[in-house]
Length: 202
Image (cartoon, rainbow, N blue to C red):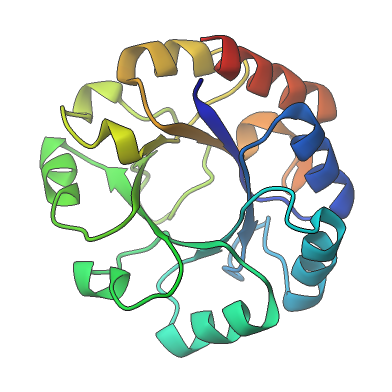
């Protein structure tokens, strides 16, 4: 069964809905440029409410290591996700599992993914000037063989296309943010439930 990460969660209520629906992990976005950004206080409330029910993933975009370490000290994160132009070296030296997001512009980006010493590789759609969360569908033709056991498929997934994406790519997990929202940063409970049900049944 393919796991589901619900990303860009900003409220305790949305986190609770996602977990109740069967989410594998919850993503908290700490990039201030995102409409789904959370601060330390909001992240702490979500973490306390979930009380370790599912892994919490902190999402960062080209953040200094000291900044990420500060968030990890303040919020009980279980994983970190590097979602910018970070180099392979930036994936090393953490005490938590690392997800490295790559925006697939062409097949060479997928080939480059093999050089990253990350626990998981997240394949997202390439949109110039935007690190993610655009709702643009990633081209699964750009995803090659290998690494499927640590691949997280993202990029434009929604309740209606997630099963097809899973059948094409057979990833370890799928990731969704805008595809289950009623507005930026607010999840639609019915979309969340349908997305996870469709992913699990694919």
